[in-house]
Length: 194
Image 1 (tube, rainbow, N blue to C red):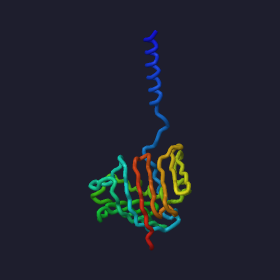
Image 2: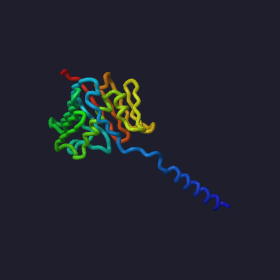
Image 3: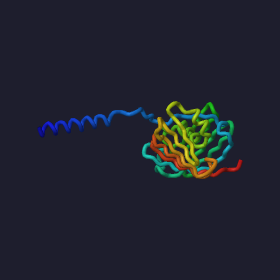
Image 4: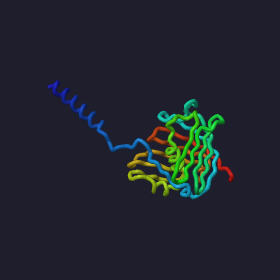
């Protein structure tokens, strides 16, 4: 009798363990690209920025330790999005988006796999109007916006959370927590006069 009870408990334990490891709804590996037009920002901006990246799965720099600060210049007008990033006084990355063509160049400090589409996506996710971002998202993705916070969700689960210290969003500090892809980006922005 005792051995049957133990066998029954072991069977229930194995069944419960098997059920708990059944796959849930498919979670995408990456946040979708946006590729919104520069004009859809609805404003011209010129920003001097400091970017601080932290994350275990995405190391941007080859010779600079993850967690260091990059300086950047971001400019957006109705025709173009332009970004230049610098480390230790050396240009490490430039990107240009005109609404149809994305071009990028990177210096030797960056790993070859840096994806300009992800960088453009993060810029647009952070700064473009919520309605424009939502319209560009595929089904199952939603963007919620509250005062000083945006949350991008996939099937109701948080994928990316943004916190803003200023208004408009590109003034002051922006924190981007990409839970899905495993990194955090802190952006300190100062508006430059044209």
